[in-house]
Length: 145
Image (tube, rainbow, N blue to C red; front, side):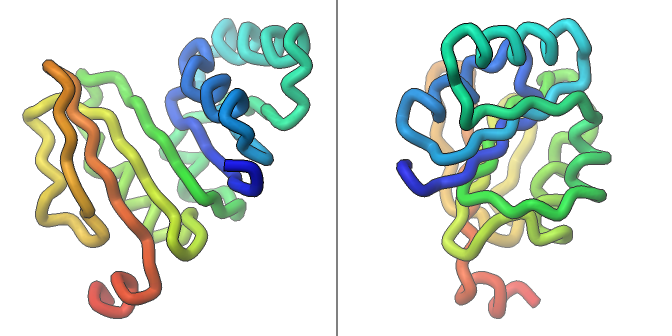
């Protein structure tokens, strides 16, 4: 992970962002809408000298539509009650938010099925938790245009 850039969407208290930092990611961006969580992540990053961790307060959907940064890994753990979870992967690919050979990982309820989506790679289930993995490659890009 030493040269990888990561975005942690719906970061909450930042646990996933901290995990990527601990595994040596070069840069980690935590995106969280709630001010108290943003404040907590900033303080934790400061306290533990995680200089490679940045946090911004933003709606994830707005961030995906308007940002320009691209990432090696994007991890999204949206609230399960969110109605538009499938829109996350649509926006990531529509707005080219992954670097070539990048990965998108979305945690979601079992009621959401991404298997027919472009770039879908695999589904992993851990108890009641589901993770869909999407792999962005130039080969996949040309086959989905």
